[in-house]
Length: 157
Image (tube, rainbow, N blue to C red; front, side, top):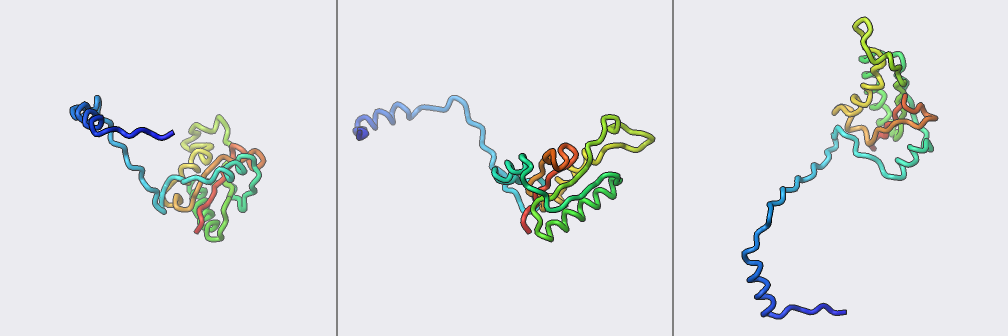
């Protein structure tokens, strides 16, 4: 079916009718989306197939760092060194074991905070110093430590 074209008289009548038309309400300006730089501090994500494999626990980490028993300062230094080395070696998926912590360990005892590595590790991974290395961070599958561990998917060099 072919569309009918408007005649010159119809076009003139249409333009005259809408000449004085005004929008009811001004639309808000759309914000331009910021492009992520190479040193982005937020993970950019991974493709759907890789995400599905991680969720099922089908991908095995190529390296593992266990932070159990470390102090905050030592754990932060170990994490930074480990991730830099892993990316330099061309690894894609690493496992960071923080431990689950105990409910009682979330309070201060004698001036020392307890069970904080699980809370602090995701923050550290999003710092600008490490953000350029990381493509994605996800909780580990049960067979790799579950809530007490994180998958870190590294960017290519």
